[in-house]
Image (cartoon, rainbow, N blue to C red; front, top):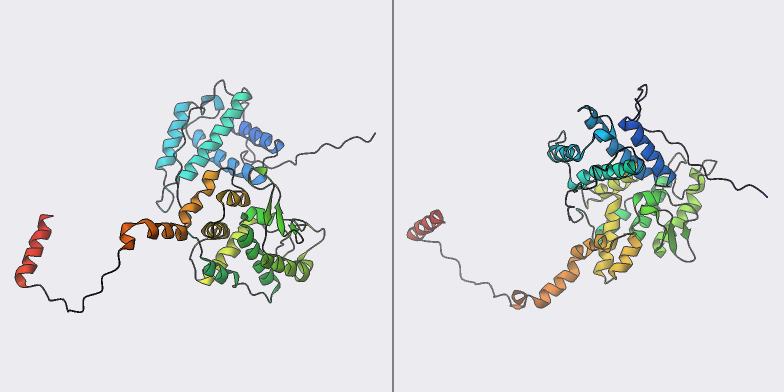
Length: 359
């Protein structure tokens, strides 16, 4: 009987461990590195691990500056002190950390100390009762109208190889609302032209989902596969759907730069990138009467509360209800007077000034 091959987890370099530094037993940094290795074994995504590692490094440096070098030396009071540090911290431009950034850095510590307690690196979890900042409920800063979205889509020069590729990528973003990382990781087998669907493998929270795609987007992807990709690909073929000019899979930073450049060039906004199309697609579907749970499934939101933000962006439906129910909206506008307005007398002007001083 053939022996079943075991899946090996690839080794990853830890930036927690500084080159040339020998850490004593029980030091905070090597234990944090073991935690990240445990996450890799549990099949957490590389992007998630990298994000957690960046937050853990910041705490490790902050702790070392205060001579706290072992997990057991970190108490709940220390974590609360770190939380106040994050609240009062100011960047080089004087701006504070956003609530989301503060929560991310603290959440990384809650996960680490929960694991460290289970592994007996600490006797009790100092982060178990640490309260995170209340999340901000903010609307997306940039949401395009359908007309504005078309202006962005028309910017790539489709007579060039990269221009045609970019048009295909923009069409996929707008049609499906997928995230930039999900777009970069699409394979040549992800698009089903017959069923008119896109399969996202291991999206956020490592979940797969099947998404509809428009005929127009399929047409541009088809042109890209036929006319462009064969000229970009370099053996061995990575099998990613969209490739860079060097034949390698696109990284998310390249996508951010590319989409942001087309948005600015179109003149519809000075800010925004890949996520603009995600917001735009969801808002447009909500405006046109799509069920919120359908949008939730397409976007891959775990919680319906996350999707409900688009109900606040759907101004069209909001305006209809407002005009139909608000009493003032039913009052006909009085015709403008044709008589010229007489200037106030000197006495009336003085009276207005005195009234203003009394307020």
